[in-house]
Image (cartoon, rainbow, N blue to C red; front, top):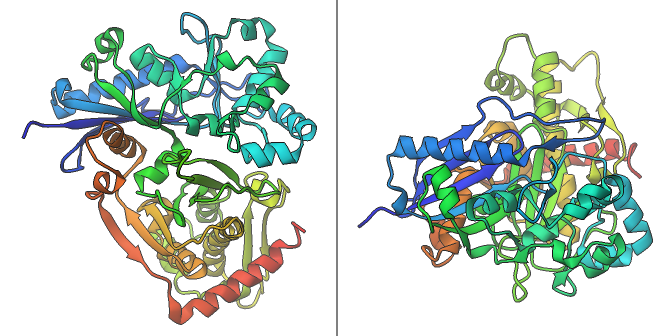
Length: 498
């Protein structure tokens, strides 16, 4: 059988990663990323965060060139391209499809007042009932900032797009976007199943600023002659899949069905669950977007919870509390000597800024229940991990209130999911089975491209070769102790959030 490969790109704010996947075996045959040091983010004022979209394209070309060199694959054997990207960014291009200004990326906060004003004036019934979110600090509000503060640039805009849309544009010369992308920009009306015309009218945006809408899984466009010359890819190679990083992470972990959860626990943590009902949290503690397999006929929404104080707390604990010089493995061994519940210590882990899940209350990180006689470093180390888990579970309870029956958590075997304490506590408190996999965003994007190109008939076939590394079941014999510790943690949390 002639070789068939799938190319996946993951366009992050730190780097662009490319992976080449064998469509039959599902194995990644080559992978690389650029730049090798973290990509720069421009912050001309406090709260601003911008990147040059052309930098993403240059790094994409370098990553593609390197994996082609490493794999020695024929580019004619690459049958589809998929793209994952940093969510919520704003790229503005002119009639020549050139970027007008630097992209305003996901962590830029300048648009908060524009989103809050729209929410207050349009009302919660419309914003939450139709778009499932406040305009907040998302793409639409960022464009409102450009309109008011840079009118000359605004007048030049031909199309707006998300970071992944821009890379697809550079590959193909065609501007288009997806419903999933529009929903993450708070530009999609779920009741009308169309663009959020009322929000567009409120901000004074012409509907023509939005590119053509294409399905998430489909032949969206194809590599142009110009891009083929720049990248070494074969002209006409189809671009068949595109999604933001969190929906794509869920796809990468084979999360498509209601009740399934994708989770990451790096510096910050994310819990992303699939819901089959059009619902929203009235307090805005979680965000709801169209998942990759959402259609007019099949409701599939991604409910997104972000926890800032995850791995960053664990790292702080290692630097500040743990015996000097020990690694995370040794730290976990030390914590394992302490019983479930850390002998009464509870740690509120929100020491890395305001949390939406806590209605943006600035709680900081706090330690409760310390006894100077019986507690030592090991207790604090364990309590920190338990506190992170409990913050995940607190957010998952909000998801359950929206109608999500959480039965399974999918995650990569990395970061805090390497810790037995972390994953056993999470499984036992939530009651969900945890499955750990060997994958990443660029590999997931490649598999998504295979679905969009019709190489796989559905996601079950696309992910049948996904390597499941480990399964963690709830510890029923000790579940009462886990739940008691979680209840005590929630009592401590109530001091900060009514």
